[in-house]
Amino acid sequence: MSYLYAAYILTWVIHIGYIGTLFRRYRRLRQEMEQLKQDH
Amino acid sequence: MKRAFPILTILTAALLIYGLYQALLVAPTEETMGDVQRIFYYHVPSAWTAGVLFFVNFLASIAYLVWRNTKADALAVAAAEVGVVFCTIVLVTGPIWARPVWGIWWTWDLRLTLTLVLWLIYVSYLLLRRFSTSGQTPVIAAVLAIFGTLDIPLVYFSIWFFRTQHPQPVIGGGGSLDPRMLNAFLVNLVAFTCFGALVCWARYRLEILRREVEETQALESLLEPRSAR
Image (cartoon, rainbow over the protein chains, first blue to last red):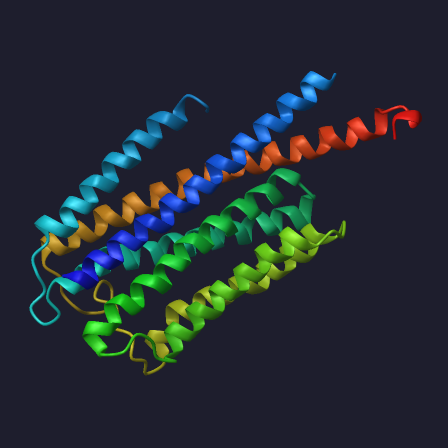
């Protein structure tokens, strides 16, 4: 059972980790865009 | 399209939860392997989704080479990156299944080796996109992607044409599957495909935004007065 749980948990750790990086990148780009708009 | 995204996210999440329920609680325990066989419900759909995403990358790369369409290039990057994530899951869940069943984590079996090569091809594709500063990067990456796609049929047919340690396909390979196992597998196959498409869509939107920011920054630097530089 531990192998099964390890496989399922790791699958979701990888997916959630990746989605987390997408959120961070999105937030950073939004901030940069807002900054550029404010400068003009 | 923006309104569809949250609805599709909720539907995909529901499908993934239902798939998890089917895989862990509804599908019967396999007689010889036991519970570890349930890894199959995540391993195979992940491999399928990675293959679909790499194929999208292939089509988008061809579209870019033919029409020089920057949206096609953005889709190619998105599909390759999300495809690598799913392929990573294949390479992680495979050895976790192999350890209790084969007694080893890894063997240089043809299917396993070709899957690792496929992963390395697309990782190198992403590294090329990340670090190359040449204006020709999208063209070089598109050509690499087209050659990389050639590995997909090799991975798929390797267990048909060569004697390998990897299990033969149960579905479409002459084997039989308990209907509850088949149902759990199909639900997860659909759920993972929807999830892959959704994440790829989000990554595509991110890539478009990144390019917009870069273009605006480039314009800003051109419009700045010389004294300010």
